[in-house]
Amino acid sequence: MKPNSRRVFLRNTSISSLVLLANPLKSCSSKIENKIVSETYKPLILSTWAHGIPANDKAWDVLSKTDNILDAVEQGVRVTESDPDNLSVGLQGLPDRDGIVTLDASIMIGDGSCGSVSFVRQIKHPISLARQVMEKTPHVMLSGEGARLFAIAQGFPLEEEKLSPKAEKAYREWLVQSAYKPIINIENHDTIGMIGIGKDGKLAGACTTSGLAYKMHGRVGDSPIIGAGLYVDDEVGAATATGLGESVIRICGSFLVVELMRQGRSPQEACEEAVRRLTVKNASQIADMQVGFLAINKEGEFGAYAVHPGFNFAMHHSEAKVLKDAKSKFSDNG
Ligand code: SD4
Image (cartoon, rainbow, N blue to C red; front, side, top):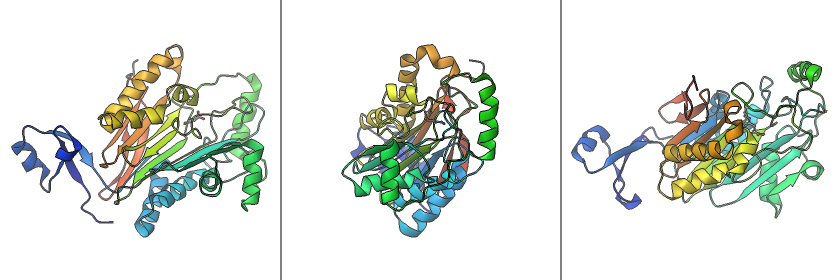
């Protein structure tokens, strides 16, 4: 990667008035009619949660070798799908209330191509299956048994249906009360959503999860729904979501973030407005649930925002790889 991708953008009234500066501080003070929008990076990879760090490492490595942002995000989130410690992604995730692990995943690139799988069993890398749906079928989404049969036809191995030791233990504990609380609060989530931009300005995203723990059998969340858990448009930017999927679906969350950016909001402003809208549409549940959004625009500017504190995201660019805490609408003490 070229090390000089860091820039500060100045926004006047339109994109055409953007100015890239080699010495941002000096130039900012001399351009008082402009305001600093943000640091921007190309390439840039963002992922939800701390497990995004190793996932981003892999994505960065792939991007460095191939310049292919689609390969990068697919390979990146496969790291999380294979992580035995993650209880919300991949076959080692927590099961539904019948003790069965079902997976949701989606993948998208900025020209509108996308694919997803939902309610799929026995597939170790649902993100790669989603990519096959995108590339090998005329469809966008395959579900359940149809997705599994398609996987077999594509040569995906079927894994044994057996809970991981950690998931088995947690499920047995849950069975004692069998309390059906479809809640994703601050402790109960780990889905990976990854969005990235290459140095060529091409965008891609991937999102993969075992979904809500102890959900009803057949429940599908936001992650495989294009526009809810993930949306990418090379003309504008990309967004992904984590948290209580039902609340994200209600506002077409990731699509909303991208559309707000299309109307001129920065990624940060777009994430904040989407959270505001989500809190209005899900007011009765809001105290007990968490959602976080991540966004990148086509300039390589980024944003993140959550309902409650506790949402963090991993960021990787040519100068640093860091875990950052997102700001939130409600503070620690409510
Ligand atoms: C879902 N959004 O299935 C996913 C879960 C999630 O962090 O993001 N957990 O609703």
